[in-house]
Amino acid sequence: MLPHVAIIGVGLMGGSLGMALRQRGLASRVTGVGRRAERLETARSLGAVDAWALDPHEGVREADIVFIGVPVGQTAAIFRQVAPSLPGGCLVTDLGSAKARLTTDCEAACPEGVFFVGGHPMAGSEATGVEAARPDLYEGAVYILTETARTDPGALERLEALVRALGAAPLRLAPEDHDRMVAFTSHLPHLLAWALARAAEDARRIDPSLLSLAAGSFRDMTRIAASSPEMWRDIFLHNRENLLKAALDFRLRLQALEDAITSGDEAGLERLLAEGQTARKAFRG
Amino acid sequence: MLPHVAIIGVGLMGGSLGMALRQRGLASRVTGVGRRAERLETARSLGAVDAWALDPHEGVREADIVFIGVPVGQTAAIFRQVAPSLPGGCLVTDLGSAKARLTTDCEAACPEGVFFVGGHPMAGSEATGVEAARPDLYEGAVYILTETARTDPGALERLEALVRALGAAPLRLAPEDHDRMVAFTSHLPHLLAWALARAAEDARRIDPSLLSLAAGSFRDMTRIAASSPEMWRDIFLHNRENLLKAALDFRLRLQALEDAITSGDEAGLERLLAEGQTARKAFRG
Image (tube, rainbow over all chains, first blue to last red; front, side):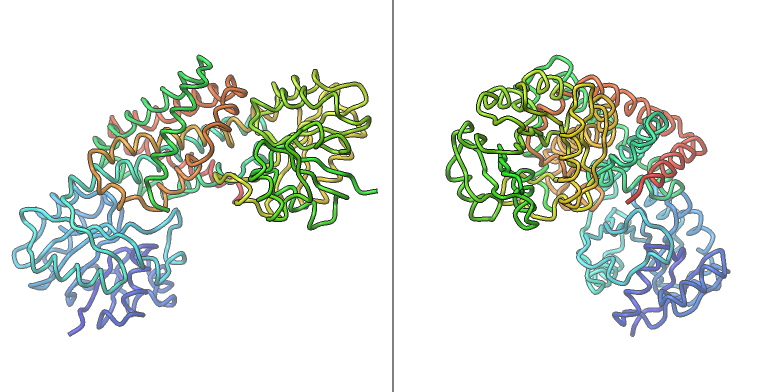
């Protein structure tokens, strides 16, 4: 029996999920839930959902699995809102990039007979909206599933199987471990991209032709500053402590480089750069 | 009459230049100059040069145009070294990413009857060596040519025509203007990439599985930390003042974001992120 899947929030992530579920024949039906009929109709016409509902209660009432794909600051509230309408045995998960606070809140909101397992597919981009969705977005991506003392093993396995069927690689992590690590691999890079884009804008006001000198390195380093401010505001605030710790570590490393430059320490500077180069090469891709 | 071109330092940039000159039929002969016969023979076998010389004097003796493609800290010294062997009317240029100090030094080293015009093709990548060279590297790239009170107009026009023939877009800039702008668009991004790669390495020592959580944003933000430490040590030190100013501006922007996160200021944080998003969107690509 294929599951009936409801996706609350059919943007880049939710829309890509719907497309993949439909194209791979992994759901009997995909129902999209959102706030605007026009956007949901676009999602349907793009093949992301079979049907849609503006009323979240209606959208989830017959769902076997519910994916909540909204900014992490809204996830728990939406869970609480739809909780009374969730059928027994329903599995609820999310697509959010910060997990500790959200998992605690969602577990607290989880009704008897309903299962919550947090999820974070490490895919996506700075693009937003279902127009940017594509059925292969999750293929080959690491997809984190949170495991806590309250996690139901059967529900976790069920979601793990679905993640594998999507072509992604499930990875179980405690929410706190997840948040500590993505602070470095995702949240800090985003924060830096925003600060760099903003600093360059200051410079551009003085030198309008700065634009023509923006080559590959600048484009790569600021690409993700085009991401959704609303979504990232929530992620940054949810993972505040880890992010600030990572930023502090980054600042110390930056300061060491600046000190070597200030003092004209050629050998010291080259050593620091070689260390960074080695560190980079330890990461794949 | 096609020029005889000598390229001192046949790596990614010099090698790509040689390939483009040869494939487009823009030189009567391309002579590579370097320190290791084996590397130069590789360059020849890859089609980057017609011939090569270990002795720089021999390499430049019949050249109409000499490109110096070595780390910026060595450019002026090499110019001074070969100066006695340069034929009258010869045009000397370089491929370096920092221009003010280098242009001053090279103009001072320039013998009577020889012309110097600094150059900076805004192409390249974190890769190094002639194995990474490709004939289309310069195509569509902005190629800065420095213009100072001492620049010979005829030599500048000659180089400009060659740059256009390579498929690149020449842009005249005063060396100081160039350095002030690339501090933001290239040098600061590189500095940040190195600091981020190093900070992530600290975190990886605590969480070895951090590697599997490094998605697109991290890869993009650290890619250029794989660049040559020797080359970038020189660039950073040559453009020290502008780079430290850019880093300070970046720090202030980062601090503002951190402050909003620390205080949990949702509206203020979203506003800062939206500003950065707008700034990023003002840049093409």
